[in-house]
Image (cartoon, rainbow, N blue to C red; front, side):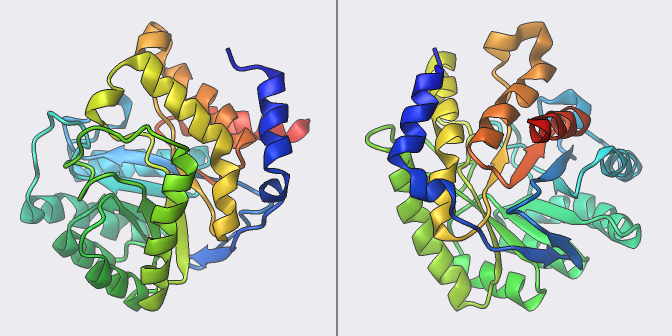
Length: 295
C-alpha cells in the first residue's frame, strides 16, 4: 500500500531534485510554462487496433472532429498515431501511415491546433513535419541523427521515449533490476546530447510507461512499476528538460471503471512533478490538475 511515509521518505532522499527547474519553450508559437503550469496532450488513434475505443477514429473527418473536441476540453497539444503500440496489432507501412496522417495534420494545423505525431519511422517523420506537425513523439531509438536533423530543421519539439529496444514494437522483457530512474537518466543523457548536437532545442522526456513488455503482463508487477516511476519522475527533472507521461489504464483493477484509471494515475504523476500529461481522458485530467492546484 502506498503510504504518506513513503512519500516523505522519497522527498527526504531527493529534496534537491524536487526543486529543479526545467527548460521552458514555445511549440508552434505557443509558450509552455512547464515550471508553473503542467500541459495536457490529447490522443487521437487512427489504428483500429488501438484498444481505447473512445480515441479511435477511422476517418480523417472523425479524427479532426475528435481533435477539435479535445482542444475545446483543454488539450494543449493533440497526439496522432497511425500504428498501435499493442504487441498483437498490425504493422502499418510508411505509405499507409502517411496517407492517414497527412490529411489530419494539415487540417488541424489550418485550424491552429498543435499536433504531435507518434512514430519511429524516418519517412513518416519527414512527411509529417513537412505537413506542419509541431512535435515528434519518438517511440524508437534508431536513426536518431537523421530524425533529430529533421526536427531541428522544422524548429519542432521532440519527445524522447524510454524504450528498451529498437522501437516500441520491438521490445521483450523489461529490465527491472536496480533503480529504474538511474537507467532512464543514463539513457536520456545520451539521447539529449545527440539531439542537441543536431540542433534540437525543444526536448521532453517520456519514461515510456505505456509500452507492452512481455514481463509486465502481470498487472500487479506492472502497476507497481508504474506507480514507482510516477512518484520518482521529479528526479529526472535534474536533466533540465520537462517530463511527459502517457497515463496507463490498469484494466485488471478498474474493470468497468477503467476510464477512471488515467485520472488516478494523473494524481501520482502530478505528485512526481510531471510537465505534460498524455491522456485519452482530457476533461477528467484537466479537472484533476485544477483540483490539485487548489491545495
